[in-house]
Amino acid sequence: MFIGHFALGLAAKPQAPRVSLAMLFAAAQLADLVWPVLVAAGVEQVRIDPGNTAFTPLDFVSYPYSHSLLTLVIWGLLLAWGYRLLAGNGPRAFLVIASLVVSHWVLDVLTHRPDMPLYPNGPKFGLGLWNVVGLTIAIEGAMFGVGAWLYLRATRARDKIGRWGFFSLAAFLLVVYVANAFGPPPPSVPAIYWAAMIGGVLLTLWAWWADQHRESVAGN
Image 1 (cartoon, helix red, strand yellow):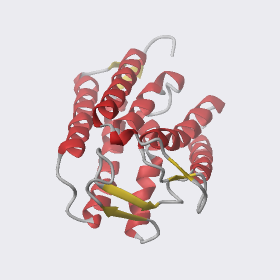
Image 2: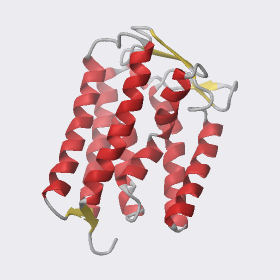
Image 3: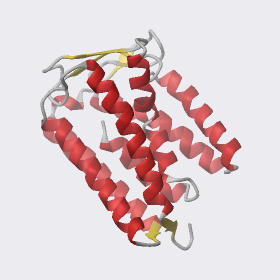
Image 4: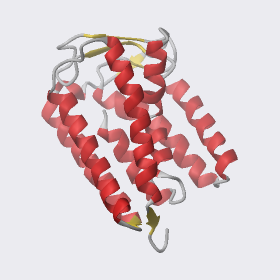
C-alpha cells in the first residue's frame, strides 16, 4: 500500500480541519517514515527479491518496531499526544492522528503477504492483495480519488500556490506510484532506505507548503 495511506490522510482533513495536511500525511505514513531509519541502522531488514509478490520485489524480512500493530498503537498515541502538547488541539484531532498511525497496519495487512506482525516476534498477517496487480491499483486508485475529493471539498485555495501546489503533489504521488509498480527493482537496499527517507521528508514538506495556502471552507 502506498497512495492508499496518503488517501486516508487526505480523507481525514474534514474531521480535523485545523491539523495540517503534513501532519495527517506523517501520521498515515509514520510506519514508513520510521522504517527506513531502522533499516539503515540494521535494526530491521528488507531484501530485494523479484517475484516475492506480483506487485513489489521487496521481501520485508523483519520490521517488528515500525510495522507491528502493537508498536503502531504506541507510536500513534505518542504522536497524537506530542502534537496535542505542541498545537493544543482537542480530542478529535488526537483521535484522528492516532487512528491514522494505526490504519497503516490495517491497510498493509490487506496488501502484504503474511509478514505484518501483531507485535514484535508475534504472529504475522497478510491477505496478499499485492499478488493481484490490477485489483491493487484499482483499489488504491479509487481510495486516492475519494481522499483527494474529500480534501478538496473541505478546503479551498487562497492563491495559485494553494491550487497548483496541491495538484502537483497529487500528480507526483501518482507518478511515483506508477513508477514503483511498473519500474525495475531498486539497485540496492541502501538505495531503498535513502529514497524512502528523502522522499518522506520531501512529501511532508510539500504537503505542509500546499496546505498552508489553502483554508477550510465554511462549516469546517
